[in-house]
Length: 446
Ligand code: UDX
Image (tube, rainbow, N blue to C red):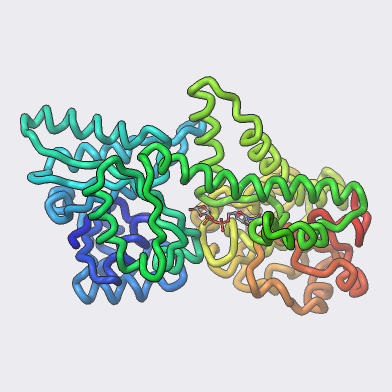
């Protein structure tokens, strides 16, 4: 099937590559000429395991093409995916200017019937907006052409995006038209074998499903972080509590890991956007607001521990930081807790020596101008002469470090662990002072 994807970001590129992999003829359009040129040379704009070979092999096979020519894009596919960004407005609501710009472009150039699919995470009612924009544009052109708008949200996780897209747990389709449903069944057939994963519903429900899924996951994390704060004060160990509740199959083990707060491009943005949507229709979403508030304060926990240990004035101090990305297996630092940590430390006069397996370029891009940040080549180098070690991301190779090296490199054997990587008793026996999240039973930190 001929498919066009507008927007070569995370969602667009991964979806396009995966559709090409199963044999569809996919053309990707982006306004960023540099990005398009780079892709043709095999330079992929994001770090995502498995994505580079997938893009390259399909590009070489001619099933995956890249262009900046929007008209060519519109003429190519029966299916027109909108996968452009929806960055937050100043007030946190999703900014739809890129989505509506693509809708207008499609209507400007289309010569026959098109199926327009919203892949971006867009507020409830966006499909109606896309339809209105397209109708207006067609009216201005003075042509009578038909089209359908479908909500088809993406559920991929950064770091596991290719696999999530190749083996989706569900394919949510919001449409009011049986023929369109049939076309989508054909498009997604290769991903829908063995049992039917396609969940078809009305458009608004599909739009809300995406927000509900992300907000539910964010709620689980904030809930667990709230319990971790209680555990600390009550002398309980949240890691024991986590196993205790996870074993209840109604709760499950996933997404109940306490930590120094969730980040990334989805949870913070989507929780805020749903709050704004709710407020715009006069409903006060108390639970969602609490989810956001707990997360904001969770991000201040590590700096608070550091100040508790060293005092409020950190001038002259240097901290080793392991982990800059918002989670492992990505170079993405959007809304990462490492940023709140560094910015708070800098404000208190301290400097940071940081290491991350993938996000060094990104850190350089964002904070390269700062003299109080040194980006170090290895995790060991980051420790040299630092007053303490802080961990913000649970990269695998932070899990079993050489503790003697840590001890000998730091001025004081103190670790502030935002991801609960180590056993508190074992690490205390090695002579470290260990601050972790919600582990009041093993070490008294309250
Ligand atoms: C998320 C959703 O998982 C995905 O379905 C959606 O389409 C987009 O948003 P992503 O942002 O890539 O994906 O990352 P995810 O793995 O969900 O992690 C989000 C954040 O939550 C990370 O900062 C992570 O460290 C944190 N987290 C996750 C916790 O603090 N505790 C947990 O138990 C799980």
